[in-house]
Image (cartoon, rainbow, N blue to C red; front, side, top):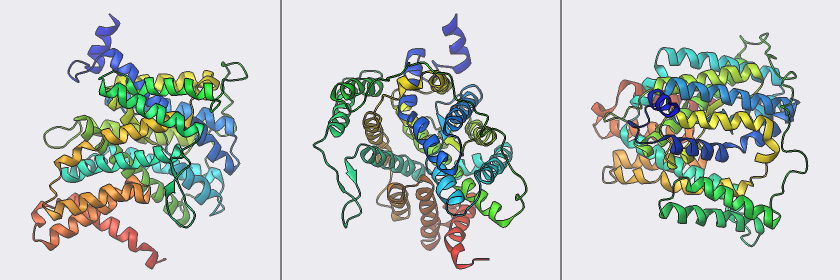
Length: 439
C-alpha cells in the first residue's frame, strides 16, 4: 500500500527508479551535505550569533525547503544554507562592513521575497530556459571540476603552496589514506554496478577513520535535544531597508544565489538526463520556488541564504530522480537534530571522496560540445574553467554568457542570441564595470 502511494505521488516508474534507490540516494545526498551542519553554525557564530541556535535554524530551514522541493517540485535536489553566501554574510557584511547580523538577515529576507516574486512570474524559469544547450552542457562539466576541486581541497590532497597558487598536499597522512580508501572503494563499487556505491564508500571509510583515529566515536550520548532557536529567530530589523547599502548587499545575495541555483539545476539535471528535448527542466519553476521559500523562511529562523546544493549530484549519481530523494534527505536532516553526535563522526575525507567521484560523473556532457565551432567552444571553455578558478558557479555562468553573446555578435550569428540571454550578458558586463562608477 505504501509503495503504491509513493508510486502515485512521485511517479517512480516513469522516472526509471524505485523506492529503495530513492531512499539510498537521499541518504547519500545527506551524507555529502552534512558538513554544512557543522560549518554553517561555525561561520555565522563569528558574527555573534548563537551557534546552537544557528544549528537548529540551519536544519529546520533546510527541511522546509526540501519538503517544498519534494512535494511541490518532485525533484531530487537537496537544499541548505549555501557556502560562499554564509561567508559573504559573516566576513563581508558583518565583519568588514560593520553591519549587525540582524541587518544581514534582513537583506537575506528581502532577497527571498524578491525571489518568490521572480518565481511567481516565471522570470527565473525563463532565465533557466534561455541558457543555450552548449552552456547547459558546459555548466555540468564546470560543476564537475568545481566539486572535484572542493573534494581534493577538503581532503588536503591539494592546498595553497609557498609562492604558488596551488600545490600537492602531504599524501602520507592517515587523513589522506582515508580519502583514497574511500575514493577507490567507491570507484570499485561503481565499476561493479553496485547501487549506493557512494554511501557504502562513505560508511566504510568512516569505519576505517575511526580505527585509525582520524575520527572518534561520540563521548557523550548519541541522542540530544535540539538547541534553542530563540536567540536568532525573528530578529529582522527594517530601519535600513531603503538605504543604498541594504540594496547593494541584497543584490549581491540575489545575484550569487540566483545563478548558483540555476547553475546547479542546469548541471545536475543535464547529467541526469532530466531535461526535455528543448532543454527544459520539468517543474523548474517549482524547484526555484523551493529555493526562494527556503531563503525567506531561513532568514526568519536565523540563518543565511538557503540554496540548492551542488552536492545533490551525489544522490543523483546514486540513482535519485524524484522528490522522494529530496524527502529522504529532509528526513535525515530532521533526525540529525536529535542524533547529531552520531553523524558528526563522518570525517570530511569520506565525503570529499564522494565529491571527486561525482565530479567525474558530471564530466560526460563534454562530449556534446562542438569544439570545432569556436563561438560555442570558447564560451563553453570559459564556463567550465571559471567555476573552479573563480570558486563560483555564478561566475562561470556569467563568463560563459558574456562570451557567447559577444562571439555570436562578432561572427554574424546574432539570430542565435535570444532576448533573455542578451539582457543577461548586458547585466553581467555592467556588473564587471560597476567599480568604475562608484555612485
